[in-house]
Image: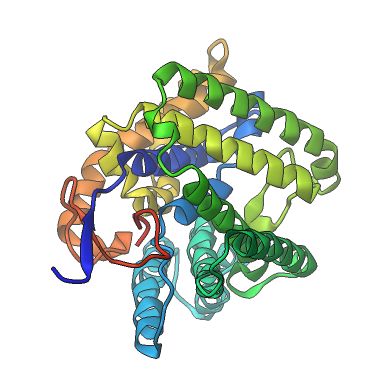
Length: 365
């Protein structure tokens, strides 16, 4: 096919998405603020933005037609499932529901009596659009130093905008989206500098590096804890813009995200993990519904020794097991709920346009 190239999908990125969404379930089911939970809160939402930056095609849009097609594609993959899941999770559909969903923040969705976790989808939509503007600007700079300078400037601007808007409720999580775009740029820089460098390293190297990075994330989020306590939280809550001290938040999020990536590389040959990682949106949207059934089943564990630590792990594993057949059914019956408009195939190649400015593979579309 002239002008295109087939690129193999990177399994470890899909595995990382699965592990990331499982950390979300773990945090949401936790009953104690233990060191594991505290560490996870440092990165469990930023990692999705980092992964998008790593996996995106980074292809500039050269015409109005390309811009429009890109916009419509993101509407279909992010906002359509957002609306569908909001209706599925709603206790009632009325004016308050419509207001909350249209505003698209964590708080407004809570007031709309639907799943507040869905804030992530409109926020990601805004972040993706901002990131594409950055990609277009960056494509016009040919020298390496200029590109690095633009990346640093863009990250500073994103951080400032995010902090400046943060005290106020923002339409579609506008303030959080700019922090998300900052992480996308970090992911983009990682893919350009390292690419698949770490994937080729021995298992022991990736394991040791992952553990070191997790420790760094734990230290940074612990240092951030006094600032978070002032806001009334025991850890970072990105959905509410509760970052604590922003520099410590960024450091912990980057360290934790890269640690998760290292661990995901160790499991990239587990086909089930890679396949389920492509349903991270479904698992994210449905896990609060599953809590209704899973938590009562697991409640006896709370009374056991170390029950506070075992309970969220058990709930997470149960939700994952239940989601396996559920995701197969959704893929067969309603792929739109996962932002897809065709059924997924195992190890399908990705078709991307040849472009000297492009690197990586887009698994997030």
